[in-house]
Image (cartoon, rainbow, N blue to C red; front, side, top):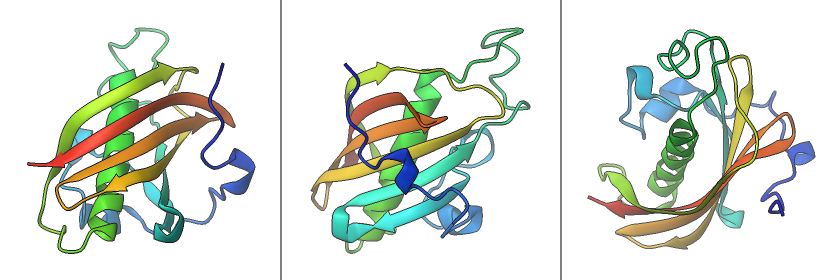
Length: 159
């Protein structure tokens, strides 16, 4: 049975980008093929929520080989995109976290429910459930075409 949306798709305005790639780069060190966020749609520390999107392009490194003739965005990259949004939230919400690196400490309850293909806009929604100076836990979802594409709980640890 699918989980409920953290934020229902009809409450997400994909036309209202609050931060673009240059602002994301101030908090996320990933570059080139590993930049997984295209823009931030909402940063809401009061409700412990962040929403971003990724424009999935047909020229991405994985398209040629995953799966030839029918490219499907690898699940690990969907989860990586959510993790980058978790890091973005952590660095903006945690005092003094600007220079810290939040790495994976755990990924639990991962379920993939829909495919993501070139041309899609993958909406990423994370809700912080625990925030400490050296650890953060998030419930995460990916949405495509108003459907849940994946869900996971991501734990990050300062490394």
